[in-house]
Length: 403
Image 1 (tube, one colour):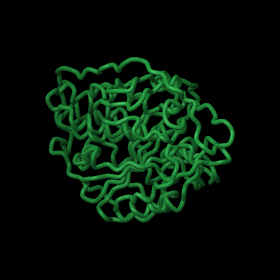
Image 2 (cartoon, one colour):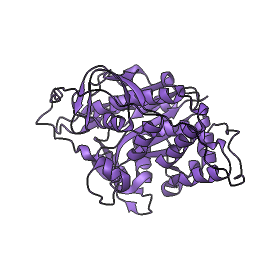
Image 3 (spheres, helix red, strand yellow):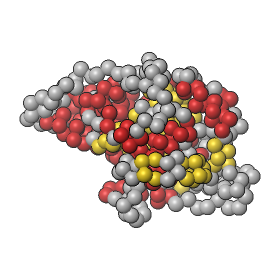
């Protein structure tokens, strides 16, 4: 499905003359949220056998809502020339997914839609180690995954979150680094990324869905935090108190403007809401993502050249993309095609799963209902309500909403 986008007229086809200094102006201020709150986080899902294992919160990765926002912000970042162009272009990291996967992939259906895999990497090195804790063992993990389907015409989108704890059959794949990794049965979904990087993650998603991914976008959580701060915070309202010592977040019920640190805590929160599962955390992430997209739509970045540049600089530093999007020009052109999709035009669901009664910390794909989701996306249709009826939810819906 080829990209359908309109290049931003502000992006030069060729780099312009150098010598342009960074713009100046007031920066956006972040606003700390309110007081501490307490909540009994010991709830367990009905029907589970044994005690739910205490999550390894230090290894949790921030939601890739930032990826969507980064794409939307990058389109603004191409309005400069010369120095700014080279600076932003040099920020972007890319990987050649197509070369690693070869031709053994789902059919590339040309119906005007696009499918993008958005992942979060959890490397323990650099700034991420300070934010996430843990040991720098040279590896990276992916604890958040979303399949973003942009419908023909680019006016609406469906976002399907894939739980990291889902047991799947991982296909044989050639990793991003070139090595071949054997297939494995009934392993956690997020093991695909830790095994073979972006290429194996894409291969696994394509195997599960039967849908070819047109693009790949990855975001790290240190960049996510900076992006929220550059935006001046994100406005949300909590319907109940949230208290989770693992994610270091305490919020009283009510309206808040979250700083980057608080937003990172919110999207990592697991035991502080719902049934304490990863599914509840996904519901928080989806609600926050809508608030984040709304914030980008509403903020007047064009009134402040300094804020505009800061957002573009952070966004391009935050993402790793497939090689087709690996430049300011291409990423901005892609993002330009997404500008018309607001929060109200985003349908967000979780891949249909059921709790694994043999292991309270795992979920299993509800294959019949998941098929309804994948068939709808293949046909560029809305996901039917029946696809998620009676599936595991996490019981955290409505805890967070846009202010």
